[in-house]
Amino acid sequence: MEITAITAFPRQVKLKTPFKLALGELRDITTLIIKIETDDGVTGYGEASPYAPVNGETNETEQAALPVFVNALTGCDPRNLEQVHARMDVVMAGHTALKCGIDTACSDILGKAASLPLWQLLGGHSHIVTTDITIPIGTPAQMVASARTYVAAGFTALKLKAGDNEAADIAAINAVCAAVGPTISVKVDANQAWTVSQTLRIAAQLRAPNLIAIEQPVPDWQLLSLPLLRAQSPVALMLDESIHNAHDAADAIRLNAADLINIKLAKSGGLFGAAAIDATAAAAGVPCMVGCNAETRLGTAASAHFIAAHENVHYGDIDSFMLLAETDWLSGGFTADGPTLTLSDRPGLGVDVRL
Image (cartoon, rainbow, N blue to C red; front, side):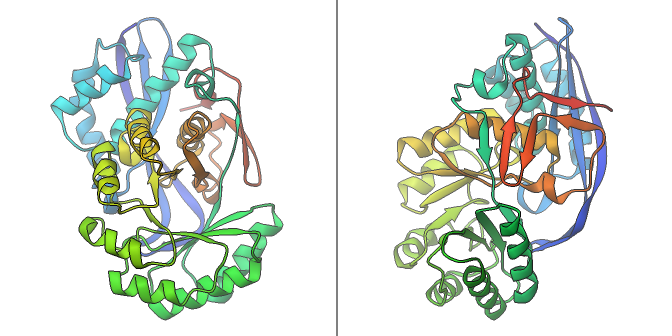
């Protein structure tokens, strides 16, 4: 089997409501849907969801870079992900979101060619995964109201965005944790907005026995400051923006800099790179969470298949499709009932794409 064509389709999708985080505010996204065709007639789809503040990509840079990858991959067997990535990496570094779109489209083909859903092909034993739900930065009252709504809808895990103002962050986190009670787990994501001293001050003032971790409180490049922070913090430390590949994960683990690692397919180049990070973390006894950029049902399906196939992934944070307006050009892949995603038994990703 050989790749004969790779085509990209940009799609703009609005968020249901504005979403504020430390890195800015999102009102809509422009994602890139990747279609890969083969000489055997098998077609695969993937999503390249860029996020410039983290991986330096936009929809425009993805489309500009795509012809380089098309030239490198034409004639390649899409089922050989190692070869696919080797060809991409040798012609252009970075561009992990675009590589993710290509990787997941190839993985879709891999599953379809084997007549198996991807989660099963990758060795998963269950087709059911769960996700938390993310609450954007707001006033304590706004964040408490959102938390109560989500808990009433069945969610047992919340993720709170933070990093706007130190006092407001403390007030909002404590208010939400008190409002939802100790049976609802909470993670806090500062998206690199705090300093080491701020993180320690804030963590010391949190009254949250249900707080699982603080995610990426300091800038991604401050890896050498993290061992001391981790040793002094009363709350577990999860790394996200500091970990783009297995080498980053190995460095963080060697430094004792992380209690948990957040893997994102768009940050690691797809399932191939994500698996390498997870394997590195698993070997060291460091559990992982799988998160997401602002992705549609297509990108979410790829992440859900990955979670289902990797036992070291303890947490799912793949809720972005719930925050987007409906996309009538996508269906299938999984069904959602509150926090529970039940994966399709159809081959590949199982998503129907109408472009």
